[in-house]
Image (tube, rainbow, N blue to C red; front, side):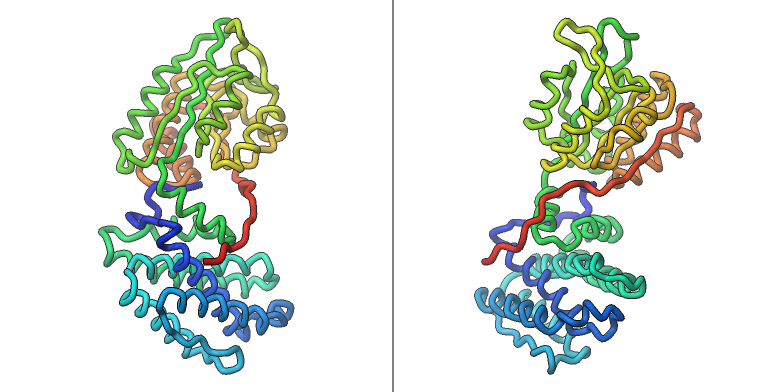
Length: 376
C-alpha cells in the first residue's frame, strides 16, 4: 500500500532523476556480485562475474553521460574495502556536479535493488544478509534526507514500500511517482430503496472529516460513487483509478447488493466483483474495505482478491460500521500503512466498545506488470 509521505518531501522527476535512480539500482546489484563470497548459494555465485560486468558498464555509461568520472573496478580486482569508497566517490561527485536530491535517489535505487535478489536465494542467512544491506542503505537515505528537509523519510515505511517492488525498476519508478499523487479513495455507496436504510451520508461525512483533520490531509482525494449499479461501477474504476475502494452498503453470505436501474437491490457475486477489482489492481488499486455485513463469509473464500482487503464478519451494526471507518481513515491520514491503520482502528474500536463484530484483514501481493530498465 502506498503510504502517505513515506518519502517525506523527496520529489521524483523521471527526466531529472531517473538516471540517478538507475545508477543506484545497478550499484546495489554490483555490490552484491562483488561481495558474493558472503552468500552461500552456489547458483547465485556462478553468474556473479557476468552480472558484475554488466552492472559496471551500466553504471559507467550513466555516470560519464552526466559528466561524472568514477572508476568502477573489475570483478577480479575489487576489494570489500573499495566498495565503500566507490559509493562515497559516486555520491560526492553527484553532490558536487548535480544535487543532493540526485544522491538521495541513488540511495533509493540501491536500497531497492537488494530485494531483486531475495527470490533467487534459498538460504535464509543469505536473505537476511540482503535485507540487512537494504536497511543499511535506507539508513543512509534517512540520514541524507534529514539534512535536506525536516523529518527526512519514514525509515520503516520506505523499507516496506521498496520491499514490495522486489527491485523491479519499473515498479520502483512507479512507486516514487505514485507517492507524489494524492491517494484516491473511491467511496462506493449502495442503499437500494427496498433494503434497510443505512446512514451512508453520515459515514461519508465522518470518513472525510477524519482525513480532513489528519496530518497528511493533502495526500488524499475522496471520490464518491453515490448510487452504485452494475453499469456505473466499472467505468468509475477506470475514470478515478482509486488507490482504495471503500464499499458501504448491504451484504449477505453470497455477495454485495448494488442498485438496479429502478433503484431496487440486485446481488453481485464475489467472483464477479473480484474480477473487476483484480483488473483495477493493474491501474493502482491496492486496498479494498468492504464495510458491510457478512463480507468475510462471502469474500474470504470466494472473492480471490489481489489487494489488501478488510472484511467484516457477521451482521454489522450501522454505528459500528461508521465508527470503524472513522477510526481507520483517521490513522491512515496520520501516515500509517493500510495494515497498520487497520490494526490501530480495530484496537481503538475494541477499546471504546463500538465494534461488536470482528474486522478481518487479508494481505495479498498485488498484481503488477513487470518492465525492464529504460536506457538514458
